[in-house]
Image (cartoon, rainbow, N blue to C red; front, side, top):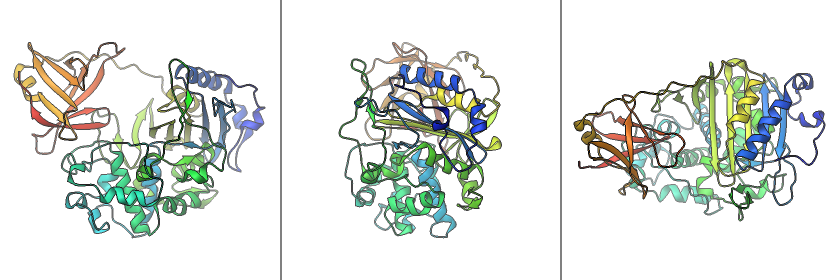
Length: 467
């Protein structure tokens, strides 16, 4: 993917009043452009916007590729993209501002504030919702109603089956958990969720074009969302996906320059433009790791993963939704951050994000982890793990024993052999896959309940298998 013409460097430096062109001109922008354009082509992504923050400055804000494959308009930094799950850090921040104002307590049952919930959901806490430990199952419907009332109506219609396990028992990523958190902010704040976000977070930070409302977003320059197509290339998602009932989990419209203001506030304990915009206690709570997801490679805070990446402590989260993908990476100790927004469903562009970060943060050399050696599994262990796993009453995956070997079956796929490579880690080599998939098997707090973790989602064992 190439530009029809390249803008002069000064036109690419967009951001706060404290932008430093001299610093930007010292960066190896050619290498960033090379990586970005290569990754756009390799991932079948029409375009992306990238911002680099250092200290209190946006040192680079630039577009690559096109905002719309039909018009071929180039991506510009001020263009809005829909974020996907990077919205979660924004929802969590707004709810924590309301906590600081004394309107809600993180450890109180949400039924204290939300009348009409089913009793099982009423016992869940805001802390559990924000850390994905509430036991709420996951789903992400892209299409639905567009009215503010859809959020509350959806939450109040939830029954006890929305919980697939005991709250507090396991980490399992849940979009509906953040819908509930957004509705909690709406009720205790006394305004529709979109207005709470505007008044509590966006306006104080000067994020002037950031919004939840499609009819407002469409009045600004907007990068169209695209779906990939192997035969004819990316095409515009039409009609655009929208579902007001799920806005708090992944539907904010924003651009890299607005999001730069958010990350600057996070990197400076709530201060921006030399003034406090958010309570520092809120930023501290937001960026504290609370939960250990399986694998031991970091902790989950509120809408943020806290990890060590190439020798530096990083706060980060990605987003994927119909038409768009996003990444926000922050390195607090270096007061640096990278924001990447893309206009293709699920696009993350990690190579571009890493190259951008390398321009402003000294990173250790990347290390390829050694291949894990297989660990024998006894027949009794195989039988112990065997069974169907799901977040509902219907099986989503099954571990089964056949001819002295453990297999994983998911959906209609042919069962694939399982290899144990750690105390809780197994790998599955699926036919046609370039590398094995890593899966974790963990137990609940009772020592008996079994969970199978595929990515960030946990499935609970719902039935026993048979040799």
